[in-house]
Image (cartoon, rainbow, N blue to C red; front, top):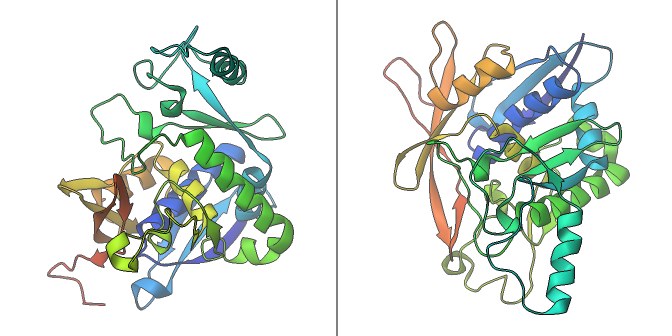
Length: 299
């Protein structure tokens, strides 16, 4: 059995979601994986330990998968957009786009109006597949889609995975030891990492309007999207969310419950709340504050 321990900031919602994503992907790739948090003395001194079957470092395996995988949109059978392009050039572009999509008879939502709303699948070199579809969830659960406009999950994931590959190829050892803290300039993201979040009021101008990129973690962005595939933080008020970190080593099916519910009998957890700020039409997560219960010391 191989084990890895990485630093994590529990006040960063994206990092906690990413920790669950790391567990989900490791369990999918390797099998029989468990993980949990060591809280430390404060929320910024915490670590995350993950162990899985086999001799290889689970963090290294997951990062290698992200660095070498290809994202592909997943479409319902015989899908066509509701509005067909009128020009020949636009129609040819649409047909080229459709040719790259994988059709699936099972779908998490109703047929999307445009390809921008489609789920995507990460396809590894070995053929392993992992679905990302939380933002297209057609159930009663909160899809927790933070980005807006005409951006698609496919275009965002393509940029994020390229950034992960660049860091992987140049700083593999550092990335494996501290995957959530290596930052790089990014033009667009899923908006999970508050270190890359901004509002025009906060910074005094719009970075988008001047083509300025902000610095954040593409690993956090991609792993957080993986972590939210089967669970979501609780939105207890408008644009206010609650999530939790857990202490015991749990398999994915229980870790999903711990993150959302924040309470499993016999397991120590720490709950945090965060507001979703607005940047234009986009929602962005902000750094969280811990919820202190009567039997819990203030950190």
